[in-house]
Image 1 (cartoon, rainbow, N blue to C red):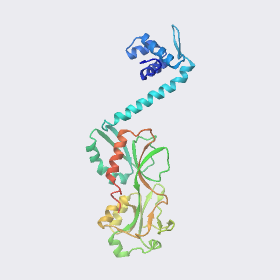
Image 2: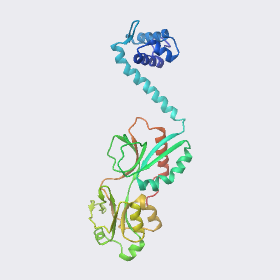
Image 3: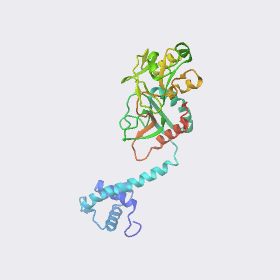
Length: 310
């Protein structure tokens, strides 16, 4: 103790150790001091609190009811101090060790994998483990530190950094349009060849919304369905039909003219709810340094607006 009535962090640590070991000698060996010094620290702590914390006899050190009450507060205080130290220490550390990233298959191929070399160059001590899957991943149970996901944000059990919204475009190749023409109103899509992505819940629905209107589902009979978006994209580029795809998948093709956006004044989607592109991670008090480094890097890379948007 430094002065009468004060409580030091060292005293709290020794109190916790004595409470758990119920033995002055065991704690003394850990601390590299004598048992009498441990006893003196505990006595000074009792004086500062004005309460007895342990019953002492020749065979045992027994916590009192006051010790049972005080132990949680002592642990919480030390934990908060250590957390503050750790947070400040992280400011001077470089991200290092393994970071486990999970991303959807095609989004990961197009917009995560191409940037990993830059991430590694910026943080050379970071070991990157990338898993790509379109299956549902629970960040609290599955082996992932950062999950890139696209969809509605409804689960409050995780934290999220939103990069932006996913937008859909109805598109076809110039070759297809030269042969079959372009739809002039949403109802015209019934007369066209449609190439539709089929996920685990079945073929995507095609929803269209006129300015100021409501979402309308347009049932279609697909000329081609596939569970592989790249296959559908190749078929569309070869003039087989129209696709309804997200901007991150076909934005570059629209910019080059390999695909042409159809019904440009009409909104398109596969769901009514807004679909966020976000990085999510377990709901912890403080974002781990590696997680923060990865997310901040992709915030910078993706930009605002997102670089693939047209």
